[in-house]
Amino acid sequence: MRKRLLQMCGTMRLMLRCCGLGRRRRSRLLHRAATYWTYSKLCANSLLYNSFTNSDVLLDSLFEPIYWLVDHVTRWFGVVFVVLVIVLTATIVLIVYVCMLPVIVSTYPAGWVAWHLCYGHWNLVQIIFHYYKAVRTLPGQPTQGKSDIPMVSICRKCINPKPPRAHHCSICNRCILKMDHHCPWLNNCVGHYNHRYFFSFCLFMTLGCIYCSVSSREMFVDAYLTINMATVAPTISFREKAFHKSIIYLWVLCSSVALALCGLTLWHMVLIMCGETSIERHINKKERQRQQQKGRVFRNPFHAGKLNNLKIFLGIEKWSHYVTRLLLPSSHLPYGDGMVWTLPAPFTVDKTILAI
Image (cartoon, rainbow, N blue to C red; front, top):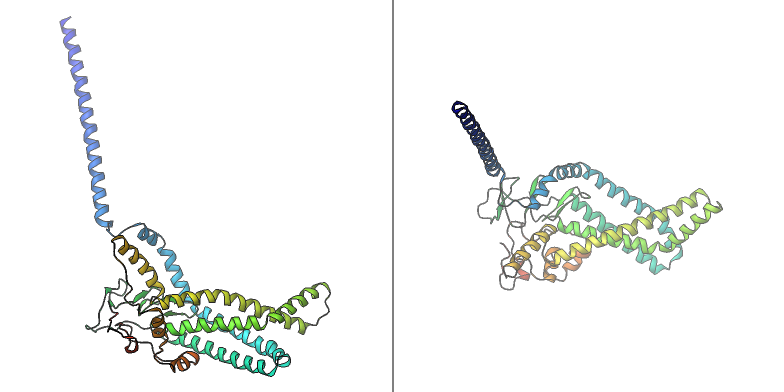
């Protein structure tokens, strides 16, 4: 009996020892797994952590392949867009000369005919001149190797110093002075040296489209009614049908372009009068919110007053410039070199320096 009790006690001790050993082994495995997990998190944070990372940076990273595709497609299709602008403009001019102008000459009084001839050709010259200059003029790049030029940052792509208002264009793959945006319809960046050409082209193209739409509105109504009647009773010839369809094409295209381009022109005029570019508009908005949270008032250092901003942008210093530089085609250079920003002499009241 005593021997049996001793055996039972030994068996229970062995079982308790095995259970304790299992618990210790399980705890060791859990401790080892927790150690590996902590080590993995530490390695990931040391390799990937950035104090500036937020949801916007994450979205930009996710959409980076799409941005790359858009940049390369825009770069290769820029020539196609330029050819498209030339072809569409040429067809409108051809229809005006072949279809609209003979009707105006034969039905309008001599004074109105003279006005149409003068205004139409003046507007056409302005469109052709400013579009050519906007496409062919380089927007400007930061000058390298000058230590006396104030630089505000380093470009992450070019690894070169950037002056105020300069930004890197991923499509052109270079930094652009006073960059506004990359325009695929120009196949060129809009920057310091061709910003005025771009805005003038938008303005005169809008005026030209409005002129064509207003001048051809009565002919458009007649052509539309005639085409609808021809579908019921085809009594017009092929030449008359081509004439009416050309008028409809002219009015629809000019009206739609006028609506779209008018909004774009007004938007850029607001930016110009505020002393901003399209890129600076977003930057200044965020900076204004950040300063407002700190109880401060943000002031755009490049704002010299709405009227002064417009005059500086157009290069108007005296009354004669309204004719020579605004009403007539002019290839005068913008103020400054795009590296240092100061008020021109005619607009300097207290020698205010606009450079950052």
